[in-house]
Length: 252
Image 1 (cartoon, rainbow, N blue to C red):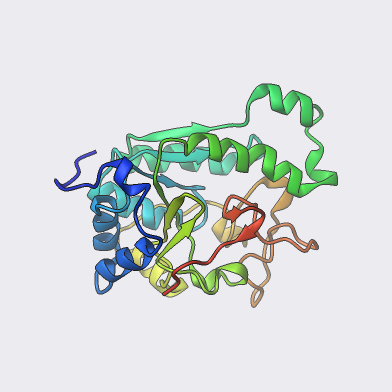
Image 2: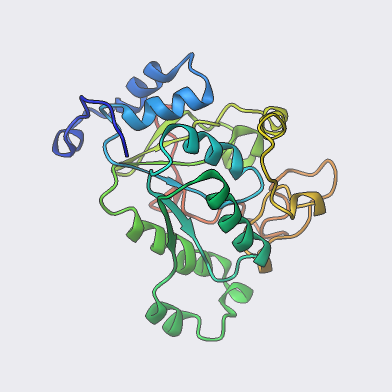
């Protein structure tokens, strides 16, 4: 990936002051979404950066921006092996159409699946354990060596995301959320303006798309994530938790 000169060495990043998220936010304020993404990739405090994408309902916006500024950026896609077939097809379609050459498909270790979910029924009795096995741990392993990661989360998705900052400290890494303050209308407008392909399940009532067993359609007026783990006191898979909690540091 082409990066501007002046990136801070990784050993210096690890000792950067705890207000680095606020410093990056100050440098990104006033920029457009694509400009923020490019500036975040090149910022001296972000170090080695990967994007993590579900290739879900709105993912194509940020993926298109990435294709315009740095298409070879490492792009981590977690295949839980319980995704909708439409999601797998869409991932390949979008990556090919946009020329995203850094895609890395991440899966749980076969040994762990055999030991912890041999019958593929863990989600029926413990969704937290299933998410940890199939998403959180594989992503943690894949993020080794990266100092920061980019997400497509947005405040309008409500719940734990309502106070989402542009950049946040998350354990020993930074998380960058270029679309944090975008509205659903802005997302739709961007997709139309650039003639981007929509996830095929969006038109079937899925504004948020996860694993097939734990995702259901959403009725008009419901929270966009109401179809995720419906009927449970749960609205996040856990990849955005640190020590079991959502972390909000240096919010702006």
